Length: 219
Image (cartoon, rainbow, N blue to C red; front, top):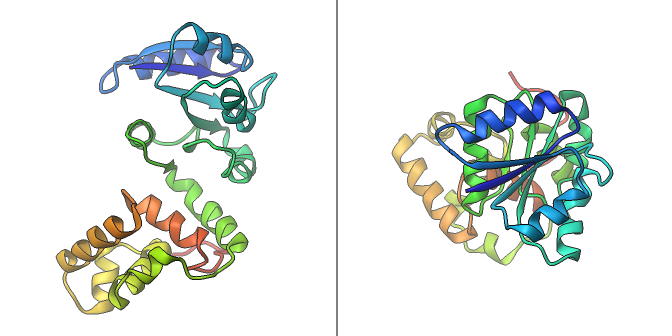
């Protein structure tokens, strides 16, 4: 596995190199402080993943997927940002990147997200889910989709509750059923909608207008 890391800070590049080169990924890591150099690096040898700071220079992180596409270079992109730059990450949801995390995300969560992206999925840090779903829900047209019509009433209700970030236990209690029954419904929902995990289900529900914008934190 070969991963390219783009960031302006040498100390961060060094720390990220050590993390990605260690188990469980054990990747070959290439680093650069210039996002423009990514094109040259990928032309020399392909990479499986690009991890890029949202404020990369001279090409900002959100513009990197488009730049690579212009040069017919294929690589999945994960964007990183400092906690104060969360609005930049949220505003970049449709830029073509496959993952979005803050730099203070727990290591286990971050590495799990990278694995999800490498497997072809979409990954968002847990601390970004609320602002991300709020933005997607506020932009949603709200029209039913063909995939949504495939869901049974029970599956539809459970998807709404998942979109509200409710746990399997909470959903089971609200519906008066078992955790296993909820998991079976979720497996069916994922299969029908082409989803892979709860994060993708939450984002799907927000993007299609199935849930309303979340404006405050929940206890």
